[in-house]
Length: 354
Image (cartoon, rainbow, N blue to C red; front, side, top):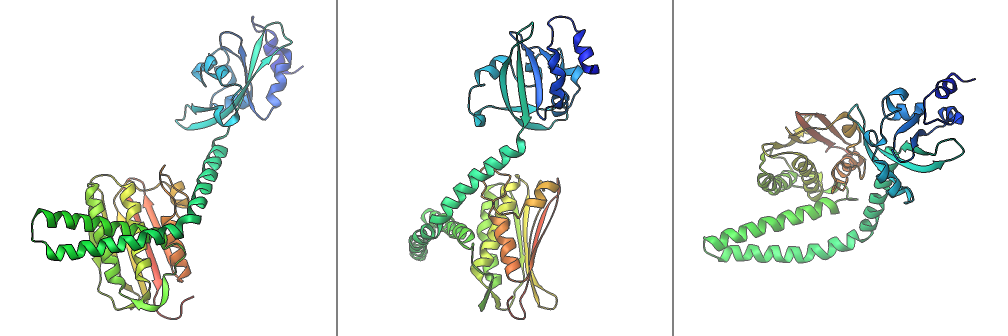
């Protein structure tokens, strides 16, 4: 006879079914509860492993101390699986999402309930990411037409405000117009940051990349100041380069936006750009002293649609990396939690485009 069966056989009332020893062979975590009290009469090894404890430490406790009150569990036992989940805090401080089911356990001397649960944290994350990807795909279908519809009136309004600024006298009205113009330019930069998806960084026509980088920094530095942050720009004067200024602005926007969104008041976000390797390589760096990224987040930060922010899109860093690689360059990101993050784009500007 199984040694575990011997142990359960000599327990005082309420009695435990002899068949419960077989539950140790199940792949799911199982708790057997007393009807009425929610007292854990039996825990298999999978349950102890999932809850980071031992079977003996679980048995005799109330289920509310490890999962949830029995009334809460029973009230949701007939709901569909997406709603029948638990947020469980483990002794190690880790949190998991557990799916569960509750059923009556008959045939024994004392009525009991069987609670089966399983860690579905990974599945839950996949489901959330799947839903977000479907939403992004739906937006992506309408995005080109939407950007076209927005850019033209935005350009018209911007031009109108610029003309008005030349005609009004210095004073409160002029200051307000400058504020409006700044916001309009930031909107244009945001649209470029999203609309640059699919555009090539390398192009046949050379452009003023240094001016494009400074223009994007000026707009983003205002956004940083609004968030209580500081910013500094050190962009060298460069000759015309075979790079698309609009894509360069989009790169500066996305890198600085990532630093600003993840930073806190007092964070410093700096932009550096220039030619390296004797003028053969264009290098652009955005560095901050913000909270930094963990190793897990750093490993995935350039994946398309990956984000740690609830309202994030996960497009920015993926866009920058793809633009760099398509131009024959690379995007290098380093980060230390508590010390900050540095993102450096390097692209060759001599020779033919890959």
